[in-house]
Image 1 (cartoon, rainbow, N blue to C red):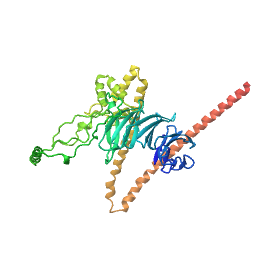
Image 2 (spheres, rainbow, N blue to C red):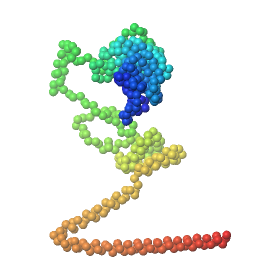
Image 3 (cartoon, rainbow, N blue to C red):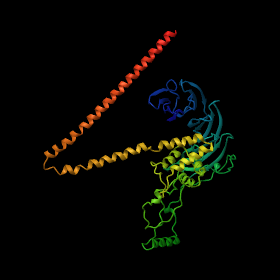
Image 4 (tube, one colour):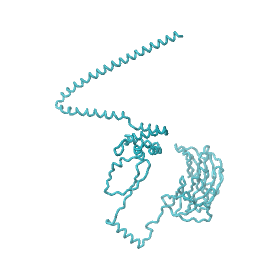
Length: 470
């Protein structure tokens, strides 16, 4: 079975062992047709690929044929006879090169534009398990059952690298930048990373001869087992010494490294050098650590004494929008930066003086306006803070009469009757206030009516004047 997903990510092309090639929609899962009338190939489908623009589809089958199909109409437009049955197929969409691994251990590279074989490579002594292109399409890396990993140069059509491994590789892939090569091997559950030496320094890529004998390379991270190492008398004496040193009186635990490395306070991530601490040192966070500031706030406080705000202004210009919002928010009382750590003066005047210096210099006018607008937006207004103190005062008034309600509880009826007159006394002032408000409202309405009447009279006079004039 062969599977490929289109570059748009909407369709999946699946080739089966029966010779059918079907197209499915990945979003709905519905069948969107198949290639050919009944079957695309008379044998099993070994490879399927689609180009970047979803115009052409390429299929390779065990019937030794490479067919070209129109993706939209599902009709065949051409075919190419292969010298042997293909085992696998891979397309490099950027360069338009289609690589096929055949059952006779050879490789073919077909140009999908001209539909001709442009390169043929031979050298493997076993079935080719997998292959991959480099990101620029210049190299083709193949792995086979002969335990070799070979790199073919497409422009020159020659073998430029080959090495041998202990276990046969089963698959291979290159990173998107070409820095690392990843392989998997038989009887191994892990993946192995290989570094591309051509990116680290000058490497000669001369063509290798046909009778080149590759050298065996050790797999990354593979070491000899401890059980396979021979134990000599000297090693036995060293082991006895180690056991004696592990006694309770001789053992000393090494200092443990922190799980997270400490960093310097600020928006720029920087690590601090570890400082040796004693076991008796307190783990409580000191007050000085709670009041640490960023580099901008420290320079702004220093500039308040010298009246030179070039340094904090340059730091603020280097910050992004999110960092500028954080720095300005820290200046306000909401951000915890209204006062200095030592209880000194506020940094708000320093920020205002910095904006004033920007406006006085005649430069960065729009930037100063933006900083000031953000500063006024995050700074709480006085009218938002004053009502909070007013709401606290009546709460103390409600607490005072509570002891009075507790004392007369034995006589349950009299205290309630005594409380009625004060409530009735509160009604007249409210009715007087309502009456006064109604009277003032009537007076206002009367004045509005008088104004409207005077306006009507003015309009009438103006109309009469116009009539007389005409």
